[in-house]
Length: 394
Image (tube, rainbow, N blue to C red):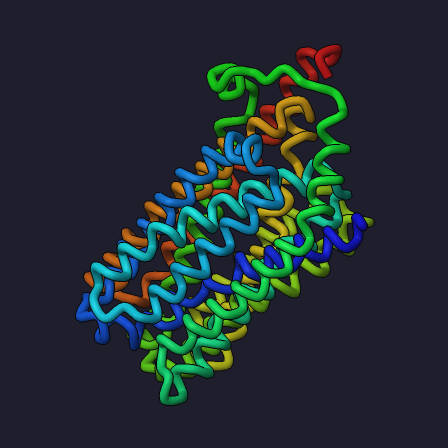
């Protein structure tokens, strides 16, 4: 029964990823349909992120009332409704309105399932779980590109993904007895006294780890949202081709997270972080120097491949860095910072793309990569210094 539940959780993360690449893939054609400036995609993204921040901070209370299974089913259903709303929108304000339920649904699923898997399953499953997210995120732009090439256009892409979400809601609903059994078993275990928020923030390295989450998600969200626009406006590539090339970013994340799960048998979390950062740097360099479509596609794929281990390893390293007794409470804070990065930076990136030059996107991504690397390296240094100073505390 546990294996069946794990399969449902994998499918839930496919569903979580599917909509993430849709807006960026569709926006070069979509913004004219809703009479919006190019940069206003960042506003839609920001509203979605506000919803994710709100629901992620409420996840603990919602799980206590509904349980993880029911919360996941309700959240996916909310996301499905929002996708159908997007497909029917013909004005920008309608997109903004439907972005609210989309964000609320996505944030609850993300926070609940990450904490659930970190608590109940082995480390390799965290990478493969996020590999499933990447599968969905890579599939979304492909679906959108397919629909944009036909009479349905971009609304058809949203409808197809909405139907897939409804199918997943049905599967989760049928699996609810499995969630109940495993949750009950987990709840019968030890009870831990949670530190206050101020006490958590005072732990050595916590603030740096939170900054690392912010930088990574700012980078990933900006690439996902603006890669197609960068290709269309910066390099004169058609919208359909750009949507396909942008999907290579998520394809790189997907493939990388599968292999990261395998590499956990040989490399520790910190080694995987360094490897990912190095590959990301190569991808950024390719985007800056590529002379043609093939080179740009390779750059996006390499950037995604480098991104692959970063987010899962930051989550998985939380108990190791700060103690398993603090991991659950810190998860919400770290993910809230992640969503702040996803919310605040893409609109700024949109202004850079529209008002200055779309060709500056890789330059801004390089800056975020450097800042993230400094934060995560400094975090591990602070934790190591703390342990040397107080070895008995660990």
